[in-house]
Amino acid sequence: MTDTVDDADLPYSEEGASMQEKIQALRERLEVLEAQNEEMRDKLLDANAENNKYQQKLERLTHENKKLKQSPLFVATVQEMTDEGVIIKQHGNNQEAVTEVTEETHTDLEPDSRVAVNNSLSIVKRLDDETDVRARVMQVEENPGVSYGDIGGLEDQIREVRETVEMPLKKPGMFEDVGIDPPSGVLLYGPPGTGKTMLAKAVANHTDATFIKMAGSELVHKFIGEGAKLVRDLFQVARDHEPAVIFIDEIDAIASKRTESKTSGDAEVQRTMMQLLSEMDGFEDRGEIRIIAATNRFDMLDRAILRPGRFDRLIEVPKPDEEGRELIFQIHTREMNVADDVDFAALASETGEASGADIKAVCTEAGMFAIRDDRTEINMEDFRNAWEKVTAEDDEDESVSKTFA
Ligand SMILES: Nc1ncnc2c1ncn2[C@@H]1O[C@H](COP(=O)(O)OP(=O)(O)O)[C@@H](O)[C@H]1O
Ligand SMILES: [Mg+2]
Image (cartoon, rainbow, N blue to C red; front, side, top):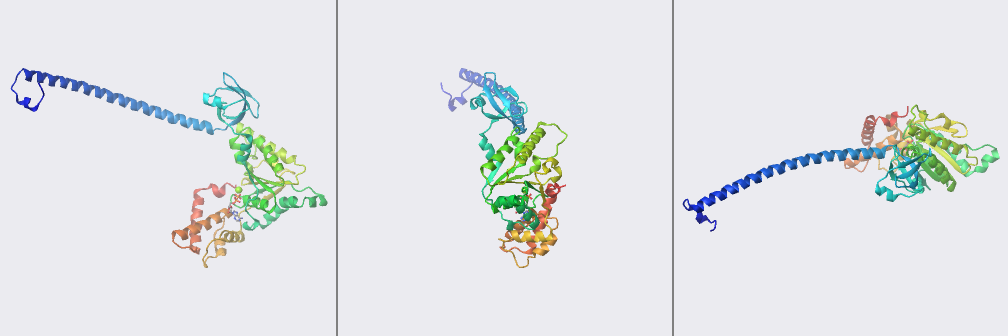
């Protein structure tokens, strides 16, 4: 017999009874299924909760991992690969230690590999060859494109730098004839954005010297145990590229006063500075290599760096005076389409406290105001609005002028 619509009207019969049973059975089945469904839903909820928990754990671990990678790293060399782990020797203190590594890292390492390790001597990563490290930290520029004419309001400073850096490179004989040692190095100091980096680059541009630039901060933050070596490398690179100008920007990062704390980071900074001092002192015949350093934090410098024979010319690079500001406005608007009503003397008198970098920012902003207004000519109002905007930004970012205490 078949379940067709015709059967529905059949009077109560045996067939009807069996149908009832069938329905009952189906109902029961449905209930079972519903219960199962409920159970599954509970399980799903549980699984979701579990998943959430793991997700959070993952986030926590990722965060921790990141933190570990950010904490100061030390450089070590792999001595031996053993079954218990990798034997490494830390640079600087020459301590040996055994450290466990993942299988992946294990295959990547061999004796003599240089690795970065964290505080607990876990290997964080394998380091590239030394030459790459050198290249990353030092920028060798054959000819940076800045000339003295691009610098406004620093005539005295330019003259002094030329005398001390350029002259000995160009006419080493003159110092011999006169019978004096050329000054060893010059230190440019002053508030940020006043043209110290520009000045150093201009020197390199006006001699045939190779310009080797190194940021002090980069030395210290990344490669603990490597600072001193990099300083040695720096002077070696200079010797290889004579005549050369070594420019150490942000020298305060490696030559600041000894602090109270005795963290390994401080010891590292000290070692790096000692190496710098000894390279400078050992510079007997320094006719072909000049050193320029710059800092925004003269107050922070360790006085040892200022002893005679080291940086014996200290050149202050202050914020520009009114005349200087006018010049800097003219320099940075050379290529700009400036309206006749623009009065640089007036702008210079209205922009007291502006650094060279501030003035450059004002010029760029003034151009933006004109563009927003769909004009190709920049007028006086654009410059005034730009100055307002730049000073407002400076107030937000207090570090701009106040780091120079
Ligand atoms: N005296 C200046 N004359 C012209 N432009 C300047 C002057 N000082 C700063 N600037 C502008 O500000 C930018 C940053 O200057 P920079 O030399 O890096 O400052 P510092 O090294 O003193 O912090 C320069 O690239 C330049 O555009
Ligand atoms: Mg600078």
